[in-house]
Length: 276
Image (cartoon, rainbow, N blue to C red; front, side, top):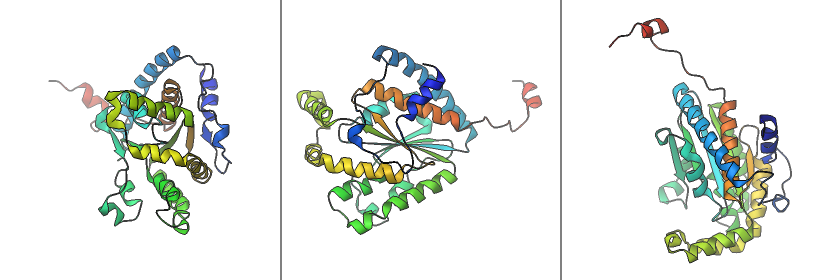
């Protein structure tokens, strides 16, 4: 696939600002014309490119990249981090997992714990779940009143705009799986003793609220996909395709950041004359 066709394909997963979203109409098992074996070769090539771009990001130290991963339970957040992000040097990459807030976090505003995990300039941050839980799970389970969580869409947009203005590039991914695929993955955890540690009864309970979550996610995409922090809905029933698309979008984003190596502190002439 040539570069033009590849970019056209990636645009299919971008949620344009102010657009209406119907997740039922977005395929979860889409793979285009790609084959699994071909995707492995492409992914290996992308890992090499991602590594080189991260090195330049670290050297430049003027920008940062924040990757946000959201999905239903068993949607593939951990797998994406493992299979896609291993192209990055872990020294310049930080993964933050957001679960139920503890008391100190509850004593602050809901974005406080998020801001503490934003990557520094030259670094890449990966969020396994994120601040969007505060317009998703709190909405589904009525943890705060509607007149409170409904204001958070604009809070989040303003927060992300501030980060963008300060040099943090934000990419947000929703790993879109079908309800049947989730059932299959949860059953695999039950059948496989090596995956029993991953079983949480809450995952099975949350499944009962599937339709309500889909509606809540649609509103998130409609209200919070912005030019400075776009949402991508990635078909994720096929893990190999999910990995490839996420890697392609990350690579293109890093390329579009126009990263540059800084000039030498001592000058080219003096470097050439250095002797051990």
